[in-house]
Image (cartoon, rainbow, N blue to C red; front, side, top):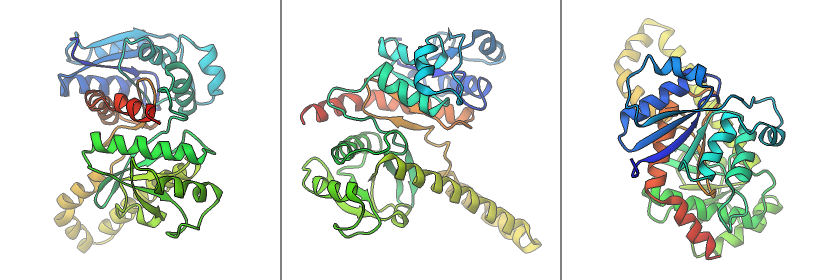
Length: 335
């Protein structure tokens, strides 16, 4: 049991909690012998769901937390006043060494505030970015930051580039990942003050493989492995990505169902199309890791289902076993 990766899961976070959260945790335990899950939340709501399921009871434990932080609550006040919430209790388990990682689909603001204040940042890390893997024609790229640090400074974007490179090297096994800075053009002199200040710093940074600016239209083509930007820009890119993907799926489906010829053609291409679309499924990776903390935090989408929660938990296993946090601490500590 001591070799297992311990993951605390906010059982009450998300639109489909606790039903999908609990079922996702059970699936993770059944799918991987390497994980030990703590379901943190209201025991009276979690236990009836567990009673319907089969799993290794030695590797899944319920930790009672009577309070719930809603998405409507001011994050700072909620973290301060609801110490018995599933969100705060789960993060406290990471802080106190009772868990190696934490997963939540709850209030994004509360997760970000809690990560910074309850778990705390690695020494030397200025800001902790939220960094999801996004699908591209060549696999996946890391978008860093996508929502945690609006109005970041140039030096912080350089740190994001270093942290993102470490993540991609260890989790996606990409040697010398290509780092690019989001801009409105490829030329070095283009962009707002922040990106113009950041460009020469990245260009002269020996720790990364900087390839220059990248325009938004080149991101889906996989022209970079680590895509660096501040949180406002990153969040717009992420939401646009999700919206276009969903729209295309609806348009394709409507086209196939609009005529007999379309239905026949759809039946023929369905297996190949299903395989391609699976790569663009937001549930595939489970959520966005909040990097640079003294323990991993994974923020899952509010509408996450059991598959998403399972994948988020398994993501924590790989992160911990590859000692990504230790490598970030070592690299940033050298600066």
